[in-house]
Structures are given as C-alpha cells and as structure tokens.
Length: 362
Length: 253
Image (tube, rainbow over all chains, first blue to last red; front, side):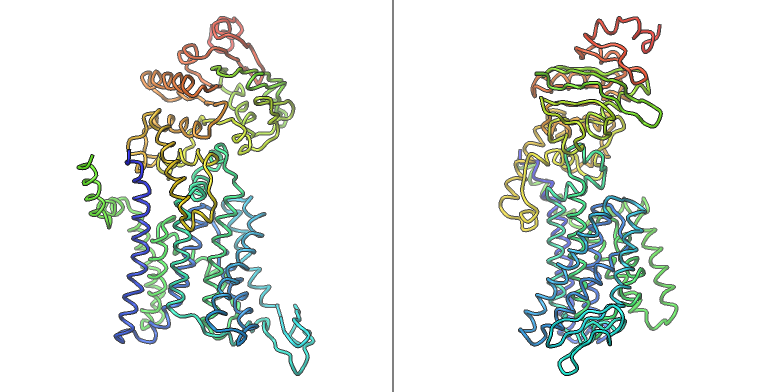
C-alpha cells in the first residue's frame, strides 16, 4: 500500500535535482571566484544571470504551468524595479543597507504583484492570442508611463508630475528629484550581490516548485490541460488563474528589484524593459521545454552567456546566437533525442536502485 | 422529494430552439437513460444541467435546491458531476493526479501551507492519495497510476478515468455522456458492470446518454427520448422502446 507515495517521490526527486543544480552552480562560482579564475566580465554577469533565471521561473509559471501566453513580463519586472529603486532612494541612509535592500526587494515584489492582480482580473478572461496581445500592450504602457513620470521630494513631501521636472514645484533648498522622466532613477545604491541574488533565486524556486506539487498547482495545471473539464470538477477558473498570474508577477518584481540595484541608473528604455526583453524571457521558457522549471533556468543561463562569451566575434555573435537557438530547438523537440533523454535521464540510476529495493522488500 | 427536477427547460440559439420544454424527474438511486438521434439536443441538456449553457427558460432543481443559472464549478459543488462525449482528461497529469484534481473540493489546505510545506500538507496529501487510489481501484486503474500520464492510457481506460474523476467530486448525480462510444462489445460489457457497481456501492444516481441500445436496455430503468429538442417519449425503458413513435424516429422501422 506504500505504492502511492511514489508520485511525490518522483516529483521531489526531480525538484531536488533542480535545487542541486542551482546549488552546484553557486558552489562552482564561489570556488572559481575564490581562486581568481573569474574575470571581471564574468563577475559582472553573475547577478544578471540570477535575474534572468528568476524571470525564467516567473514566466514559466504562466506559460508552462498555467498555459497562458504572456509577452509583457518585462513590464512586471519594470514595475518591480522602479518601486524598489524608488524605495531605496527615499530611505537611503535611514536604515542599514542590507535591511533596506531586503525591504526594497519585498516592495518590488508586492507592487508588481498588485499590478499582476489588477491586470489579471480583466485580462485572464481572455485566452490565447488575445491574452498575449493585452499583456504585450501592458508591458509597453508601463514602460511609456514611467518615461513621462516625474516624482520629486522636498520638505513638504512628494510631488508628482507627468510633464516635466520643472512642473514639480520643488522647494529649491530641500528639493530632490527621484524619478526624472526619461532619465529614470539615478544613484540607486548598488546592493545586488551574487549571494543575495542566489538566495532570492532559490526562494523563488522553492515557492514555484512547492506550488506546482500541491492542490493549487494541480488545479492550475488542470486548467491548462482542459479548462472545461477543470470547471466541471468544481475548480474556480478565475481564482487559480489569478493565483498563478499574481505569484508570477511577484517573482518578476523580485527580479526587477535585483535589476534596479545592480545598475547605477535605472531607465525604462525599450532595450531594458521593452518587448524584446519579454520575448527573450519567452524564449528561455520555450527553449527550456515549456513547463520545465529547470530547463527554463538552464536556457536562461546559456542564452545570457552566449552573446557575452562570443563578444570577440563582434557582429557575428548574434548569428551564432540564432544558430544555437535553432539547434537547441531541433534537438530538444526531435523524437529521437527525446527518447534518448528518457533513457538516459539523470538520476535514473538512483531511482532504479530504489524501486528494486522496494520490490525486494515487498 | 426527487433528486433532480427539471421543469420546461428551453434554450434558444438564434432561431434554433435546441431544447424545447424539456421535463425530467429523476429519483434518488435511479439509472436513467437519455436517448435520441444525432443532433436531438442530448448533450445540450447536459450542458444546461451543468451550467455550461444558461437556459432561456425553465428551472433545474437538485435535491430541492434551485441550481438554475449557477456557474459550472458551483453546480459541481452542489452535486452534479459529468463526463464528456469527446474525452476531456488532464492529459499532461498522471492518472492519480487526474483523480486528485477531482478531489479538489473535498480536501483543503491553504496556498501558504503548500508553499511552506507545513505538516498539514503531507497529512492531507496522504489522505488524498489514499482516497484517489481507492477510487482508481474500483475502476481497475490503480496500477502505475502515479507514473502513467492520462494521455498514455488506452481509449477504454481513458473513459473510465473520466468517470473516476467525476466520482471523485462526490456527486449526488452522475451524468455520463456516451460512456460506451468507441468501445468494443467486451469493453461495453465491462463498462456496464462498472456502472452497476458504482451505483450499488456508492448509491449513485446516474443519468446517461447512449447510443448503444444493448447498454441502454441492459441497465437503464427509465428513458427519455429526445427528437429535435422535444421530448418524444418518457417512462419505463421497456414501454418506451416499444413506443411506435420512438421506433420510427430513432430505432428505424
């Protein structure tokens, strides 16, 4: 009768491999940097790698687990980034740096989550292409709104304007512009370290993987597989779609907060938070094998590294990048390689041993 | 009091009255059949009963509770579960997880409990697994249920899994939409036994749509015959099947 415990065994084995992979990467990087084998270019990439991995986890929850196409996830990251940077700018020096940074990350997540929830209510009634278009529009709107947003602070409190910094009416002596329209937020403390980014990454991973293997996660995946059937067994579609979407937005907000504290100036340019970024996150998810959190992280790391490592090839690197994309796509989805992977699954050995021991026991 | 009372249920799609003045009374524990030629409106009746469509007119009462106009998920909670004519399983979930989704509203723990993996998570999941395996055992699907994906089951077993999933929601009334469609005579016989079994052991009331006359005559106590959205005949199976109107419209002269 112990037989039915094996689903959870299989699931947690898979999860542990994901955690193991991330921890191993962390330890390897620590060893490399301790022995001085990492050049400064690579060191500068560590935090972005974590950020993009977090974005991959976030988008995988919507695209792979909930089965809805969102191509505006850079928008949630943008909201989180600006909320966190705004908080950090306002409270810089008022409390210990590490505490301020932790609160900033949480604020980034919460604000992005609120946006995710509010946008999710009308948007999640749509599906397929329509949802994709609306999320795309959201991402662009957020970026453009932030580009015309001016927020300043003086002795009298906060001033907001949507036209120019001069219209803020700041007190000349105590006034300080925090968000300066197209110039964004400058002088955010550079707090993001590899260690903190890694901790946030692991927390996000725990949240998503634990969610997937739970009552809520099953409901979310049931909606993905067949929403009519899911409803017929008493599952409230909107509730679970919103849950997944909001959690995904919160995680994107965390990534945004880390992003904001990794740069000296935060500007909502198309290159940073535009449509291209959203598509890049989507590529991570699709390439990693839709629905596979581990795959999404691996894809995020590989695709972030390739252009950087190939920098010496100048303009040809994007050519190589696209060839690698096509090759991975072909390999990932071909019947033969799938059969091969099924046969040579990592950890299969351990599993076999275990199941044999069980048979022997019974 | 009857378990299900439907009074003059109608639905209009544009100019088409797909179901017209449909009446139905099912007593607790009955095995009721709904038959009729293709396009007669049988599945539309199911979609109306489960809230998939909102009726233009009419009242549906389940166990005395008016469920007209309620949403599908709410109607399921009130006690109607169904299967689909074209199988609708959660294909990428395991056989076990399909049934556990059906158990969704019977076992509760919060999102926070699942994310933080509190002891309650393990406790409730264990109960869910036990209950799901019990149900799967009834349908002979318990072997490798945790590792087999629903989409990898053979056709006949997929049909059975759908019934198991519907049963997992602990319904008062089970609606089966052509459960024997595409099955060979052996599978149909096995299905008839299973339906009889769940009815006896779970004290289930069943309403089924079926084209297989052997199955209908074999297990249904009462029948309603639909034709062009209208009720052609209603009553005891034997009487209805001998009704000349029914023979003419459906069975062929």
